[in-house]
Image (cartoon, rainbow, N blue to C red; front, side, top):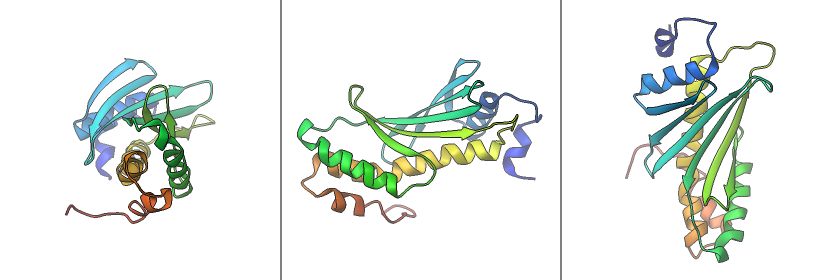
Length: 167
């Protein structure tokens, strides 16, 4: 039995109920905005990340959006967009977008649950973990692109290797 099996009692459960159970298991603060939407803030190494997960019954998709503030000078936006595209080439399970008017970097992912498929707690946990890992991994690159005097390729180099532990 996996660790997450113990906190979900039924297979017939709403996807957002599963997200809520995962958040409770990790002791993350969350707010159930509606029956089909939940928001939480998770503290990372670099910053706090805002996560919103929403269920679309019509599309049969559990959508995750993880955002963090990023407000680079306008002159650095082309470099930021280039690093963002390079980062997206390095990931398989989601993608980044910069929402200029809101001054937010966003990681987006959709878990398709077509044909009455049920989201497992492990899937939801991994989905959230992957979003946080991607944001943590590429945050320094986005910072360098937005405020540093470096090329986009050099800014991305800082994120190419996965890090373990802290210096």
